[in-house]
Length: 166
Image 1 (cartoon, rainbow, N blue to C red):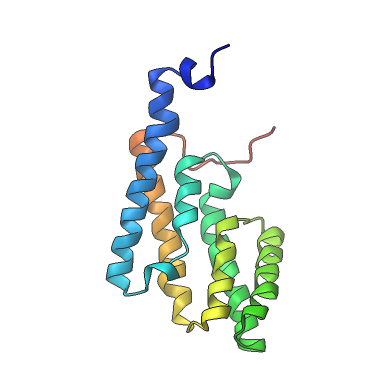
Image 2: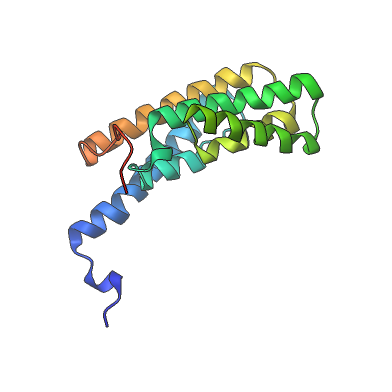
């Protein structure tokens, strides 16, 4: 019995392994550049997992532009709602993340990596500007980078237009 790795064609290796790895590399490099330009500490930019998701699984519903941008924005709103109403505490990160999940579910913009936003906002007591830089700006840039990358490497793959029926 041959393992899957032995039966993989060269084109499969390129499309399933090399292209997503290259996309992740480019995405993280862009994130580091964004970190240097914005002066927001790298650990405060919660997009590494979003980059992995959109580059490795561009057909995932969680990787749609609507989900990336909407998920990050709504989860930030959840974080600020808890921060401004209840304050900053690691204990308050729990309801902030829960509220973010509820908002993303109701709006159809679930993007699991965005769950880190309210955690950061509440535990670090970030200022309101964190919503714009890095959250909003970073989410839009991430979608643009993913769109350009996939357009150049796998035209027509990203973004998916409607839900896959499975």
